[in-house]
Image (tube, rainbow, N blue to C red; front, side, top):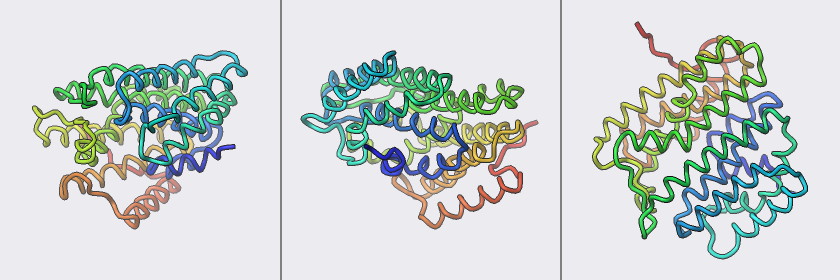
Length: 309
């Protein structure tokens, strides 16, 4: 039986830090959702696989999410896991491969979620997987993807991360009915919250992506414009965290959202100074975690929020 907590640790960095801070049942819901999105990401990034196999895997994942019968889902999940791990692996990352093999356990945990949360996880994960299919279809014969302009980059970020922000928002609203008054403001900022984190990752990982045949940074767009967009989105992400906190969200939900935002700010500064591949040291990450937790415990805003006129 796969240990989902161990899979989370082996397939994530930032979210392995932040998910344990969520209160139940949201913690379990977000953990399962993250693992499902990570399965989709593995197929999106599966450079060793031909385009058609990647498309089929994404469609198979959507099929699992739409399966109604628990018994049918268990059998289908096992067939998918066997198919995805047979032959050439889609990734060299052992954690991702173990996650694919553990698809039946992940889907078992998915079926145990409360029904409203399960629907939100299924709908948003399928939206992301089908959005990824559109970008996978654009890979050339050598498996390379090139984004054309800033709108194209934002479209990609929405598919792989903005939708995640929207799903998290719906799960927070389900768990905390008192957030209803903040719902519109949260939904308005949810996609930018996800886009901000994705843009920082793209800037940080751009050299590695290029080596693997992906170019998420459009050649026609000056790098400075992407940095500026990431900073603008991080400001909106800060507003999102502030709305959560002021709306009465649990402290764990505030810390969960604040941690990746604060880490992204510092990573963005580091990449702008040192170039792609620059990372925060472990001690720096620990200092950010301690600062965020202390401010949340005191009821103080744990992220910087711009003053708007």
